[in-house]
Length: 317
Image (cartoon, rainbow, N blue to C red; front, side, top):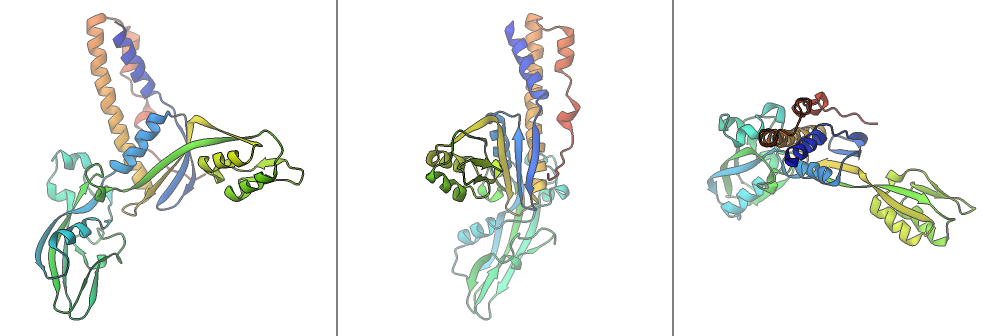
């Protein structure tokens, strides 16, 4: 009897989750933000999505026609697979469509050619990979692949496919991590050891001549560094907010970090929608067996707030 109501309450909590995000630093490949109003399991789920679920192109199949270099075919193929490839997700099908074979597989991959014959000692670089799509190319064109001496050559075809890092690290789009938002309070006058904190957390605090401590910006120092300061300076007390974090994302260069974050949120949103669908199914089963929920509660349970499916945008503050 209580099962249906518990399912209803869980679904309602998910749909009406309010999270505040303030971007404090952003570049083409890096973003740092303060996230407030989310529990540790959810912030960690977001981190894992960025690391293992955001798809990128990576060389997955290599057809070697000729290879007289010092590298075995398998080693050469592995080196090619680990070269980051520029990926524009707007021009590719959704990763779910590729995985479920809902689209032509050729739309989920790009063909490369490598044809180099050495007439003098030469280094083969990532730039020597020629793509059928000029916009799909190695992120770092000066990545060395192999050295050739006169008479050696490599002729091959390679296919970069869309994939996720949960299957192989070559499909990892970047890194993501977080730490608790530090809450720093001054409980006493500074002693001699407290001067070390001005070196550990440069610009985050100031110690005046009378021993008083002024906290300027807690975000100029990580939570771990603040805890180190607390150990050497008894005048500081460092705590954390369990539902507030400093979260950062860094792209490996396959795509701008904003595209990486947007795709991560799209995938996480899809996971939540799958969970909500399962909860609705469980809710209907519970209603059928107990008749516990009222009509008004049922209607509320099936309504998805507009902000749950809204478009994400990123502005630096």
